[in-house]
Image (tube, rainbow, N blue to C red; front, side, top):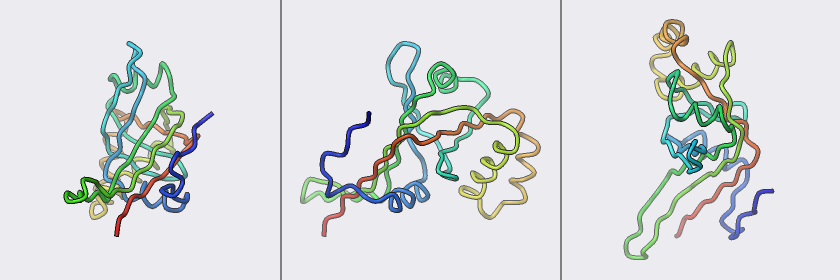
Length: 156
């Protein structure tokens, strides 16, 4: 169903993909809008349990799109380095295709804890209080990965 990467020498192992996802500061989510066009949203995320998790408001286009069609794409790019004299760029990237859905209960709290640990590691206790106080007005979406590829371009 999914095409393989054209340039196999740039494709990386699943272990490298996991590192890229763990180190990424943000990702780009692509959903299918009600008008049939892709809708692209940059967002913060956490990669845990072989899934992507992100938080969002209780309402909005992103959630509407996911509720209508849970098939999404998600991409992360990091370690970019422009090489102007060679008219190119080095980078590490991951592209994911998966199924997105809202989660609740303990899974939701675990994902929120993961987000706090990633983005606010010095504020775990305050984050736990924030989760207890605000989780009822926050949605968490889980993307189960159906297909993933990773690419690294590093020139010496």
